[in-house]
View 1 (cartoon, rainbow, N blue to C red):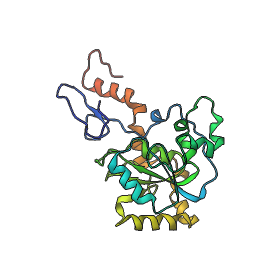
View 2: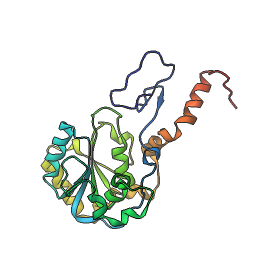
View 3: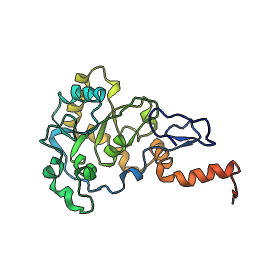
View 4: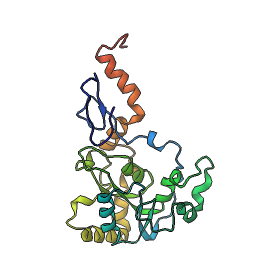
Length: 236
């Protein structure tokens, strides 16, 4: 199994598991396994002054530069180590003390969903831009009740609900993207349309992404091995 962007076969495996549908067994980042131990408290209040949430503690130069060029145009809070503008790494719980309700998750990053749920938008930038490499960064934002502003896989729409994200790569400039985000934040009807899918549940491409996540991998892997006639395999 190799879930990293530069997935590689060793040449010795019978089955190869990765995030890509073209490999033997797909395992997406869309399931709940990546959220284990997280605080799922979701705020009913959205910050109308500070529009964008971002947090990153792996300060890759290319991603940092992209984030900096966009965030300079909008009011935002940047948590984590990269481009931090909130006064430290532990400020999320100071800003949102209601996120500390769960005593089993004492670190601020355990309250990621709770903190980002206070914002209308969450900036999600992949480490690497590769087809089908859509990681938990995007799904965290969706699960928190925010609208993700996404930079990453060119086929990202194959993994998410319809009209649920803003694909930053579709804009001619950061200025154009920022103007769109500002206008959307001030238009309750247009903003609500990005959440319309939530009334319908997990359907379409998003349902497929959830169905092929790490959550279901053990059973799906057993099924594939069985079909290949694995040792002592039985089919019912």
